[in-house]
Length: 49
Image (cartoon, rainbow, N blue to C red; front, side, top):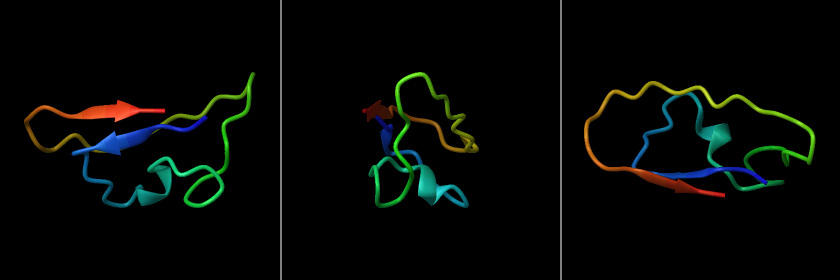
């Protein structure tokens, strides 16, 4: 599983944009991953896995 962001600009962290096996490694059951990004814009955003 990964997370795909909508509306969040991934400056410097585009590899965390959620396409497993393409832009980032899968997050397997029992593993963890910390998403780090700067929330520098106001608005309504959403994400999904």
